[in-house]
Amino acid sequence: MCHVCEDNVICCDLCAHRCKIRDGKTGICGVRKNAGGRLIPLTYGKVSAEAIDPIEKKPLNHFLPGTEVYSLGGIGCNFRCKHCQNWEISQIAEFRGTLYDISPEEGVRRAVKTGCRSIAWTYNEPTIWHEYTKDMGRLATEQDLKTIYVTNGYITEEALKDISPVLDAFRVDIKSFSDSFYRSVCSARLEPVLESTIVAKECGMHIETVTLIIPGMNDSPDEIRALIRWVVEHIGPETPMHFTGFYPQYHMTDKVPTTAATLERACSIAKEEGILYPYTGNVGNTAYQHTYCHACGALLIERRGYRTDIVGLDGSRCLACGEKIPLVV
Image (cartoon, rainbow, N blue to C red):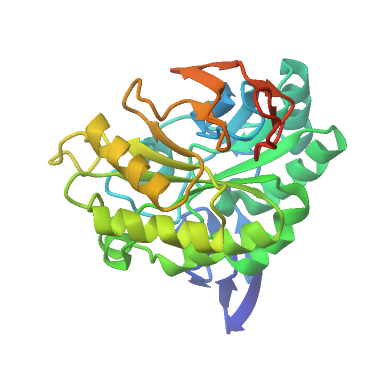
C-alpha cells in the first residue's frame, strides 16, 4: 500500500497522513520504513501483547456477545493522543517491552485452540499492521473465525477496501466531533475518521463506535448531539454507540475522571436522537450497560463488568416480541 512519489521518496497509502518517507526513514507510525526504495513493515509478526478477552472488552456488545476473542497487539501508532491508555506500546519511541514472533498461521492456530470465535487486532493501531492482519485474516476466514479491527479509523479508503474481504468488524473510536480536538490532542484530523467509517459500512462490516468523554474537552451536549446525529444519518440508528469514562493518564493528568452521570446524559441524548443502542463504559454499573429490545423494552443481554448473560434472545430475535435485533451471533 504505497507508491513512489519522487526520487528516493515513498508515499505510504495506508493511513490518512499519507506520509512521504525518505530513504532510511519511517513514517509517523514509526514502523514502516523506506529501505532503498522499498517500504518495509518493520513489525510484521512482531507481537507486544497477546490475550484471550471477553468480546465486550473491545468493547463490542452486538458482535458475538458473550464470547471470547483472541487478541493481538503490536507497537506503534499513527496518532499521538495525549491521553493514550496504551502509550507504552503505541508510542514507539517510549517502548521498553519485549516483542515476540507469532506468524499468521500460528496466530490462527492459537485462536482455534483456545476456542475463541474471533481474532481482534487491538491495543495499538492495527492499520499500520496491514500486511500481517491481512495475511492472518485470510487464514482466519478459512477456519470460520471472525475478525475485528479495534481502530482509530485513520485508514485510507484504498487500504480499507483492500482488507475488507477478510475483516468483519470495525470497532472505531470517534474521539470527538471537533477537528480542533483531533489536531490538538491526537495530531490528526476528524474527517478521515468519518470517511473510513462510512466506507466500512459500505463494505458490509459490523460497526460500533466508542467516544471517550473527557471533562471540559469533548463533553458538551451540543458536540455529543452533533456526533450522534452524524452516526444516525450516515451509519444508521441501529449502530451501537459506546460513551466511555476517562481516567487521567499519560500526558493528560490534569483532568478529572468522567462521572457516570455525564455518560448517562450522553446516552440519553443518543436515545433522543434515535440511536437504538447507546452504552456506557469504564464507570461501573449503569442502566446503559445492558441490552434491551428496541421494540418492546425486554432485557436481552445482562452485563455485570465483563460477565455477560444472554437472557432474552433466541438467536438474534427477542424472546418477548420476536423482533429481529441487530446482532452478529
